[in-house]
Image 1 (cartoon, one colour):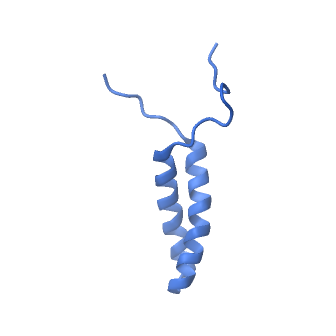
Image 2 (cartoon, helix red, strand yellow):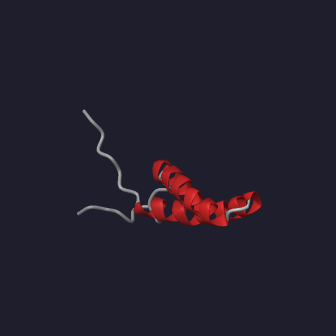
Length: 64
């Protein structure tokens, strides 16, 4: 049986935000902060989408 892919919008947003900040400083050190922000956003979003930080509170996604 195939597993259903998860949807992780919070991981995408958090990864993009943290990746942009880290990418800015890495890009600034290499001479081009704009490319650092773009590549950092992509890498951070892809990483945290797969890591899946989980729900905010235990039991917050209960189905009735």
